[in-house]
Amino acid sequence: MKRARIFHRGRDCWADVIEGDTVLRLGDGTLVPIDEAQWLPPVTPGAACYALGLNYADHNKELGFAPKLATPLIFMKGGNCFVGHNGASPRPADGNQMHPECELVAIIGTPARDVPVEQALSHVSGYTVANDYAIREYLENYYRPNARVKNRDATTPIGPWIVDAADLADPQSLSLRTSVNGVTVQDGTTADMILDVAGLVSYLSSVTTLMPGDMILTGTPQGVHFCAPGDEVVCEIEGVGRLVNTLVPA
Image 1 (tube, rainbow, N blue to C red):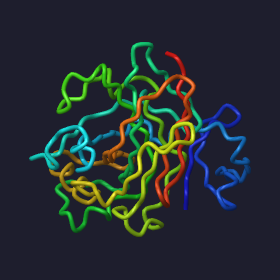
Image 2: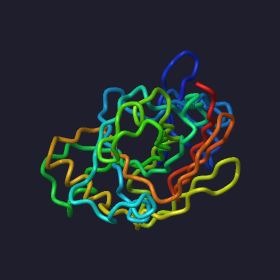
Image 3: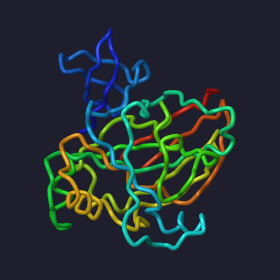
């Protein structure tokens, strides 16, 4: 099952994705062709969002860091940074080093506190795709991503939908790919995560109680490509979805 969130006839609605991903079915039975949908981020209002930095060894090597950190680099993201599928993200005039980062997102389904790794995935209800843009001109410290880098309005596209965890056999064997104007700029696999999804859920639950709807952005593989206004950026994760975004001048 796949679930999407759209704006339809003045309302914020959740919908099931049916008929080979071509139609959305609202709770009242209304059918909306997928190419007519006004996509919203598939995010539960008020949910927490935890994001990972430097969680792929190949990306760490690319940036000149040791393959593995002593502890995970985790930062928070606010709700206003998200934008839905087919949305637009503003690129600041001085953001010449703004680049996309394709990430698998795990959605928490049941409360989790002090969960052992072996039980962690049972607390994940589904997965989606995020493009966690970074702007290197604004980066003060890789170990402490600041608000100007990771919390700007509409600079984290997410979606297009949430795939049930039961429909994804192994979150650690998925290909990730990013293209800009049709040219591949990232090509990786979730197998290269330093701390896998189960490990992330377990670690975070040892710090705080994870609640239904909370999201974990799990990091990005190697591939740094600076984008310009007008670029179309597509992030795809095998078995999860294809997320499309366009950059516009801020």
